[in-house]
Every structure is written in structure tokens, then in C-alpha cells.
Amino acid sequence: MKTKIKFYPMKLETLQLPFIILLSFLLHACSPEQKFYISPNGDDQDNDTKNHPFATLERAKLAIKENKDKPITIFLREGYYPLQESFILTEEEAPGDNSVLIIAYPGEDAHLIGGREIKGFEALDEHSEAAEKIPLQFQK
Image 1: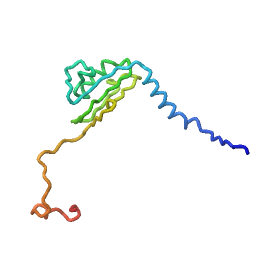
Image 2 (image 1 turned 180 degrees about the vertical axis):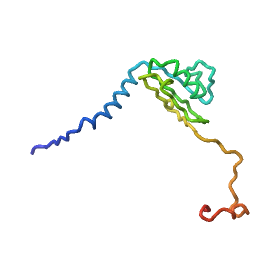
Image 3 (image 1 turned 90 degrees about the vertical axis):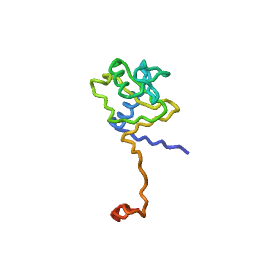
Image 4 (image 1 turned 180 degrees about the horizontal axis):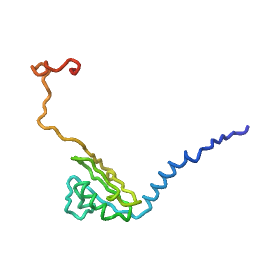
């Protein structure tokens, strides 16, 4: 009994995106890169090493501008990073044709937080006078 093998030809357009993604990853992995480290306990006045990281993405942005000639990886160390505004890299700040990769340091969890912490918040007692003023469609 012969086994039949079916061949499903793919259009060139279907192969382009996976190939481009793979090529980008390989180029990033094989190119000499500049590494920066950021930690909630860091200091933006430091020279930035793994043991003396920056404290903010904004400080790393300045370092990116100074190293436009190679791919850049920014490692976020364990912790929370409250952002007061969006982090944007413009064409003038980014390293030309090279990539900027922002990732959590291996084995650690980094959290970028947008918004503001509300302090002094207390749940409303459902039997209070204020709770009775809440329209029914907004009550539990």
C-alpha cells in the first residue's frame, strides 16, 4: 500500500511575513548589540551596567540616541515601572535600520504601569446614604 503525500503550494505573499520575522530575529541575534539595564532601584546617574542599572526608560532613551550604530536590547529588571506618560521613540531617537528590543530580564517579571495610584480609597457601605443615591443600573 502506497502512502500518498499531498503538497499544498503556498503563495509567495504567505511566506514573506514569517520569513521577514525570522530574518529580523536572526539579524538581531547575530549582530553585536548594545545592552542597557533598567531597575526600579536603579539610578539614572549611573553608567548603566547589569549591577548599576538606569532607573527609567527615559534615561535609556538618551543612551539609545548615543548608540544608533547597533541593535539595542533594554532589559527591565524585576519590578513595577509606573509611567507618567507614553514611552515613544521617534525616528530621530531610534537607531536607524537597527532594532530596539525592550524585554524583561530572563527569569524576572517586569510590569509597565500606566495610570495613577489612588490612595485613601475605601469601599462604599452599601447601606449608607451615599449608596442609596447611586442609580439602580450601576448597583450590584
